[in-house]
Amino acid sequence: MTSVLVVDDEPSFTEALSVGLRREGFEVRTAADGRAALAEISASEPDLVLLDVMLPGMSGLDVCREIRKQSRVPLIMVTARAEEIDAVVGLEVGADDYVAKPYRMRELVARMRAVLRRASDQSSASQPSELLPQPQLIEGDVVLDIDRHELRVRGELVSLALKEFELLAYLLAHAGRVVTRDSLMQDVWGYDYVGETKTIDVHVKRLRAKIEDDPSSPTRITTIRGLGYRYERASSPAA
Image (cartoon, rainbow, N blue to C red):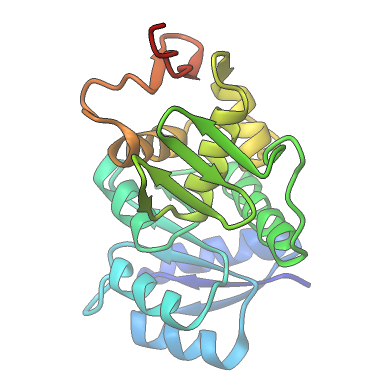
């Protein structure tokens, strides 16, 4: 049975969520603060962590940082504030996904199972061939080395989180073509549904900050309004 650690300081919320998750077949443990969560992770090694951003004493973001020092357990941040900054910082410190309160149980469970599937794929060292089709993906001065899991921009090594790497690989593999938000959600994130989430936007914004000359006016990853994104082909040098 898949075990989930719910970290939240609101007893009524934790109790209701625990009941719902158990009905979905999960084994649920709880922690009311960051220190208790870290101790529980060390003791029981849960399969997934649902971590609230707002916790007493030690914030959820700080807890996430500490967890990532000792474990790669799949982790979803939960926030009562549907603000982009929560998502950006949460992903930056190592969260695999985030969800804003209030949410539907069906949506939360779908996101949990998607994160667990990705973790399983990574642990078995299997990479979808459609995401990583070549040893290197090159567009101009952007070079993504699949085997070495490295990105170089203008010759400089650039650090990427795993999901950023997979997203950039997908965009580069489809350079010059529009990729829809639906296809990104299905092929990169592996979701079986299209939910209302800023996850794609957050990751695209972070990629632009790392590869664009001017992230506020992107020329590499462009937005195709109403459809999705396109990685623009590098211009050929004039003859």
